[in-house]
Length: 372
Image 1 (cartoon, rainbow, N blue to C red):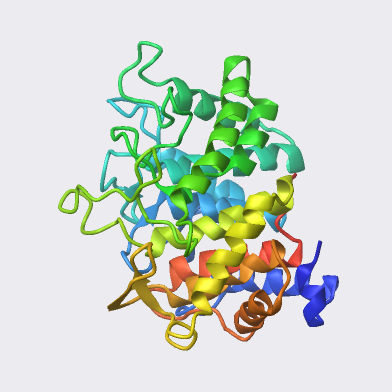
Image 2: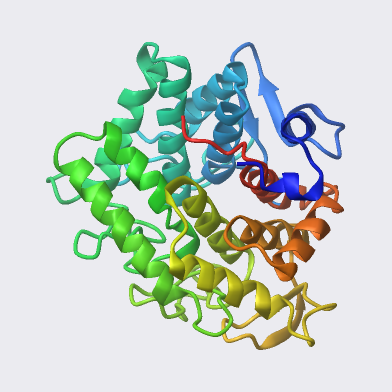
C-alpha cells in the first residue's frame, strides 16, 4: 500500500522517487554516493562517517538492490562481503567480520548480528526474486547456512557462540554478550527465515518472532515510546561497557532510531497490532510535546529527559518518525510525513546512516518495501 498517496504522491511517482534515491546512493555525485564498484564483479558500501565497510551497510545495500531489482549490484556487494568479510576459521567461523577497510582488510574479527540478519533476508528475497545460482550465488543455501550458524553455533559443539539466546530466543547485541539491542529485533524477517530454514531452525525462528514482538513491549518506554541502543533481556537499558563499546548506549541515540522503523515494517508485512498503534502514538506524541516540538534533534534518556548534545543523525530521526504514518493516521504522524517529504537526502561525511534509513523509510511509506 502506498501510504504517500494521501499526500498526493502516486504509485508511479513513488516508484520513480525510490529509483532516484537508489541512483543517488549508488551512482550520485561524490558528495552523495557511498557505493563503490570494485573491478569487474565486486563493490562495497562505505560508512562515510567512519570510512570503512560494515556488514550493516553491505547488507543494507543488498536489501536496497533486491527491492529495486538490481541484481548486478547485489551480486557485486555479496561477492565483496563473501570474499573479504566472511570468516572461515577461528572463533567466529561462519560469521562476517563487522568492519573492514575499503581495501578488504579486516578491522575486526568480531561479528555484528544486524549485518547477519539483513544478509539472510536479502539472500532469501534474491533467491525468490531471481532464482538461485551456483556457489555463493545459491542464495537460499547461503541464507540457510547462516541461519543455522546464528542459532546453533556453540550449542552444537562448534567454537564460539550463537547470535540468538537459546533460552529467550532473543537476538544478542553480539554473540559474546548476554544483552540485546532493541533495533536488532526483526520478527518480520524471522517469519520469512522460517519459510526456508530446515527442521528445528524453522521452529526456532517462529519462536524468535514471537519473542521479539514481546521484547519490544518491554524495551519501549511506557510513556515516551523510546528505546535505548542496548538493552538487557528484560528490556531495561544496558548501562555497562562504556569503555568497551565506545561510550554510552543506554539512551535514545543512533541505533535506537531503527526500532520504530522496524515496528512499522512489521506492521505492514505482518499486520498492525493494537500494541503497535499504542506505541506509535506514544512515540510520535513524545516528539510533539511542547518542549520538543521545535527542538527535537537531541539525544534523550529513554524517559524523555532531553540532553544538551545534539543528535548525530537528525535526518534519520525525521525519516523514521515518519514511518509511524503506516501504523496510525492522525495529524501528528501526517506532520512528520510532510516534514520527511520536504527533507532532502543528507550530504557530507555522515550521509551513510541517515540516507540508508531515509531510503528504507521511503520504501515502506510508499509501498515499495516488499516481501519477495
